Length: 128
Image (cartoon, rainbow, N blue to C red; front, side, top):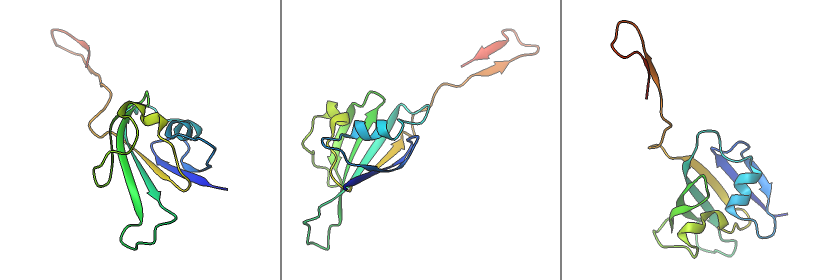
C-alpha cells in the first residue's frame, strides 16, 4: 500500500495511505487541518523518483506558499522551475507515492495583539 507523510503545523502529523487522486488539500484535511492561528504557510513536497538511477539527485523538492484557502502564490521545484500546475490551484496539487510534505508557518505573519493601559493616563483601555 502506497503512503504519503506530512509534518509541521498540522494537527495530526504522520503517515497516511495514498488514495486515488489524493491532493495536497486532501492530505492536509486528513491530518486534521492546520494548527490554530496559521493563515499563511510554506509547503515543501519532497518527491522521490523510484526509477532514478542517479546518485547525484535523491529527491526533488517542490516548494510553494499557500494561505488558509489553499491558494498558492508561488510554485517551483528546488531548481526554481515551475511545476505543471496553476499558482491558484495549490490545493489541487496531485500527490505521488512516498511524497513527504512539510508545512511551515509564515514567520513574518502573526495575529494582532492587544495591551491594556490603565492607571493615571488620559485614555485608558485596550490598544492594538
